[in-house]
Amino acid sequence: MTSINTEALQELVSFAREHSPYYRKHYAGVPQHVSKLGQLPLLDHKSFWAANIGLPPENEVVTGPLRDGAVFRTGGTTAVDKVSFVSREELQHAAQGWAESLIQAGLQPGDRVANLLHGGDLYKGFLIFSLALTEGITPTFHLPIGFAPLESQIWTLQTYQATVVAGMPMVMCRLADYLVEKGQQVPSVRLLLYIGEMLHKDQRALLSLAFPFARMGPVSYGGVEVGLVGRPDSPPGGVDQDSIAYIVNSSSMIMEIMTDRGEVITKEGIRGDVVVTNLNRRLMPIIRYPTGDIAEWVDYSKLKFHVCGRTPVVVRLGSASYEMERLKEIVSTTLKDERINSFQVVLRRANGLDEMIFRIACRPQNAVKSAQEIQDKMNSAHTEFAKEVAERSISPLVVEWISIQDLHYNTRSGKLHEVVDLRAV
Image (tube, rainbow, N blue to C red; front, side):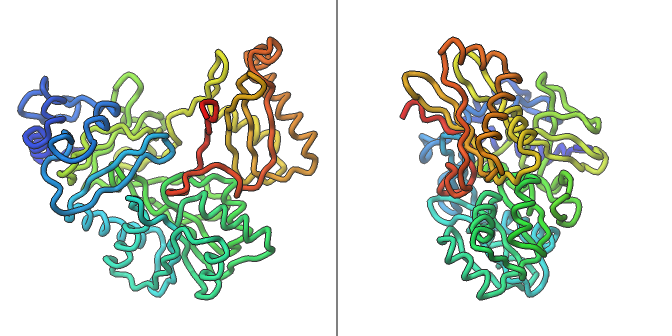
């Protein structure tokens, strides 16, 4: 965000104010002439999504009747689904942006591209990827697999010798795990493109077993509700590739990184919350929208940044709270010499008490010993947990060794549910 097109910003704000009842109320105290983003309040997620329901006039966010375009489901790993509206022109613009990103991500003429994204049920992934291949200038052969059964996916990949596979990390990892269990590989694949989530080092290791000659990289950074925010700065890497750097899509986006006190960060290496303004969206304007991601500038003058993860996910049990990242550390450090395919926390009621379960997609050499080590580390790292167990306020930690196929995930999008709360079920 080294410079802002003040004319474009003023036009966007004026349009939203005039045509969207929500923005009109949201900007009630904002001057008519806006030259700085700092003059505008951040969007409040709760009120924004509460106002973005149904058709106008009930829907107070959209700026006009829904005559052309589409509606897409969003919400990711959250419990509540939300929807995002785009006009036909905005959808075409998004498809062109994806087409450009695919070329930058490594797509080559003649690639046979396996599309493992979900289609239907208002989900955008399969459709936008298909449109991008159609809109793109690079000739490719599309394998529109979607959420087919694993055996069918493998048959298509092997029969048509797919060279590129695109999908959610969790979807590709389940496929890879299935291939490894069957003692199979797909050596024709040279490129794995992940979408929607970060790809972690342990996942890279699993994917490399099933796709031994594939490099791995993201298509872009963004989301259904905000659009394409950034593109990768470097070609896809291998198993040991460090964090990905992105360049802001400055022709369409203004991206800010902010402290929890609301101060804009311009220095490199300081983490903060990502806030996005989409300069192109008009049907459902997105202006100073907190994405829930954490990022840091690598080179502010070039709008280069790293995505550092999501706003901390907190697991609440008994009278204490536990950050998901700290729980992951307990598992990863204990099993540093094992292959961990994925990890999930489940909360449930057992024998009249709340219980936390670590569900780990891993086959350790000594399951009983490893489970005990994880339980011991949990008790020593979180003394409040051990105290409440001793007082019989909560149940002891349970460790389950499972297949990656048995994890709870969003059956529509393929995203992993990091925390599953079954206590009210």
